[in-house]
Image 1 (cartoon, helix red, strand yellow):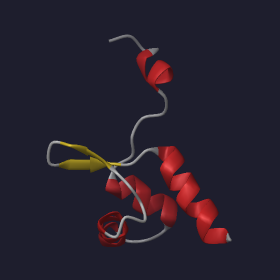
Image 2 (image 1 turned 120 degrees about the horizontal axis):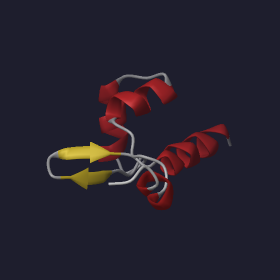
Image 3 (image 1 turned 120 degrees about the vertical axis):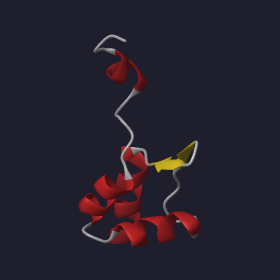
Length: 64
C-alpha cells in the first residue's frame, strides 16, 4: 500500500482509547455512548473504530 492511501480514503479511524483521550473520559464511557447510539462507530470484526468527523460532530453538538 502506498503512503497516499490514507489521504485518499480520509483520516485514519480512531480506537476507543484515542476517542477517550480526545473527550477526556474513560474508555468505558466511549463504549457506553456507542451502545446508546450517541457516538456511532464502525465495526471491524470484533473491534470498534470511530471516524474523527463523528467525534468532532459529537463534541460540536455537546457545546450547544
